[in-house]
Amino acid sequence: MELPEELIALQRFHGHLGVYVTLGLRMGAIGKRRFGHYKGLTATVQSHTEPPMRCVLDGVQFSSGCTMGKGNIALEPGSEPEVAFEKDGRSVRISLRPGWRERIDREMSKDKEIEQSLFYYEIPESEVFDVREG
Image 1: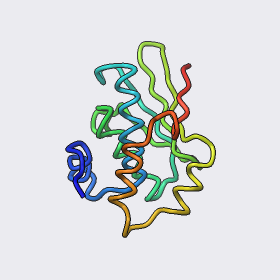
Image 2: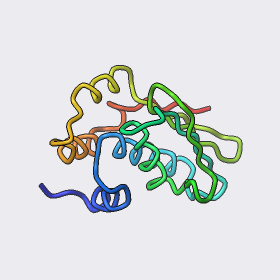
Image 3: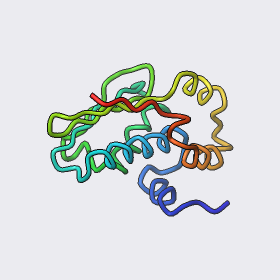
Image 4: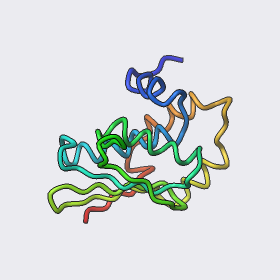
């Protein structure tokens, strides 16, 4: 199975592919697209504090430019993966649409992580994410 270069790079960064790191990549890309360069951008990620959901944090770091090292990203405990970006008094909140987390947790499989990552990489944003301004 041929993977897009971005997923290959994400796999190198994170150590493996998986649904939540791939979703984090997509969430971070939305934030970066809305606000441009990471300078002045902050991200607050909500997630379980343990993998696999916590892997969303690496995906957000990878694609948004917000990193733990720069101190412009934070992790807060939460029951659903979500990220809030802020810059220059503007904000956007990205979360999974209702029902997706349950489906992911039910279907997630280490044996199928490549196929599942590719599915979540290619699915239209509007099908899987709620994006709210402010």
